Length: 94
Image (tube, rainbow, N blue to C red; front, side, top):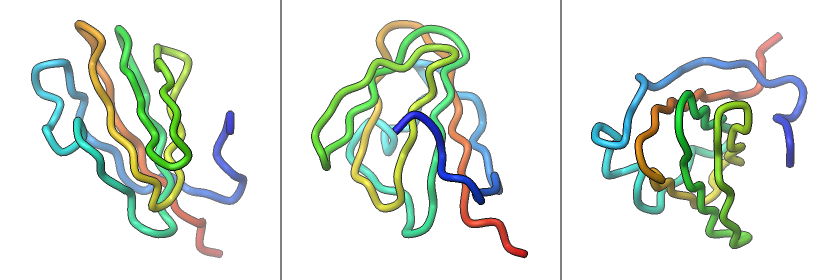
């Protein structure tokens, strides 16, 4: 999937993390809540994005965000120096 589905609205964003401040919880398998999508934005450097179901690994870079589906197990790993943040989306309310 190369983009978020239509009809979603951003509602929350994490602080910017680097390779030293990236929380341990993001480095191990975790999930978004049901109905919540996320975009992983890399500002500088590279980040390995691992999805458990279906299994795949994607290298994220500036301009190539990672899309997290609702309730999808995933984790990230810095590939050297990097800066990133996560933006969360859910269905826009009328």
